[in-house]
Amino acid sequence: KEIEKKLRSLRAQYTREKKKTKNRPTGTGVTDVYESKWVFFKRLQFLDIYITPKATQSNLK
Image (tube, rainbow, N blue to C red):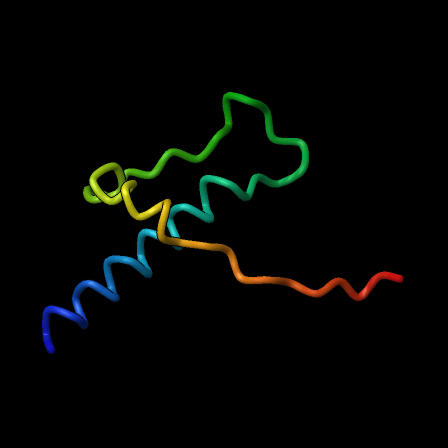
């Protein structure tokens, strides 16, 4: 039970860090790319094939 909780926590943190690397404010240069300093970030990159983005709905017509 505790291991499952820890794994969920690690996966959630990895997802948050991954979002930070993708979301760049308008006007940021190529050199201003966020690079995660989290210890486990590179070690958990294998999760990329298992993490799928949630479907979104547009409110534009």
